[in-house]
Image 1: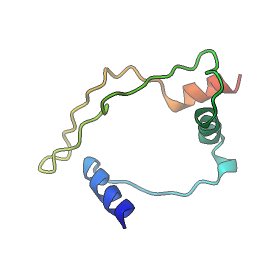
Image 2: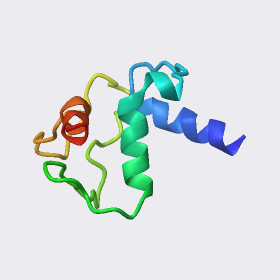
Image 3: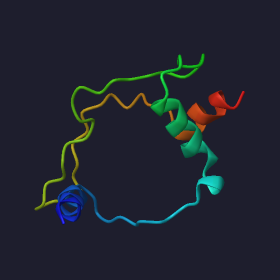
Length: 88
């Protein structure tokens, strides 16, 4: 039950969430990134690795869940652009 408790704690940072099962065959982007991340292969050109030393988002204030403080500079590429670089 510890995993369920951890999920409950994490979800306090969001206004809501949805869990949806997606078959691996239908989610090639995530599958490709997971294989890249689990291997010890060099990172392909055009793909950038960023090691986060601190969380990029602070937890939401339970009294005001609409207000979330961002710590990052906002210069993050989307998953789609990262995956499109892998497929070329």
